[in-house]
Length: 69
Image (cartoon, rainbow, N blue to C red; front, side, top):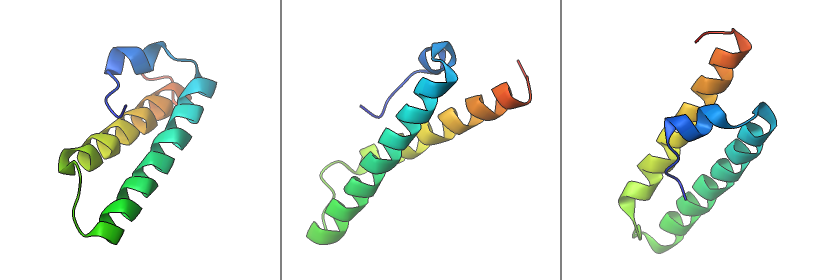
């Protein structure tokens, strides 16, 4: 679920971006906790994908706030 394309994110309204950001942060937290408890990551690339998607959402939100195209 962590991979969301940039075009899809730009098409989302601001409220939906906020909800998606909250959801991804929760997923990141659970992935970290699961890795910490088992000492073995099920999918090591998932952590990186989630972080990148969070960064994309924050970038798009910032661009909208400052009206950058």
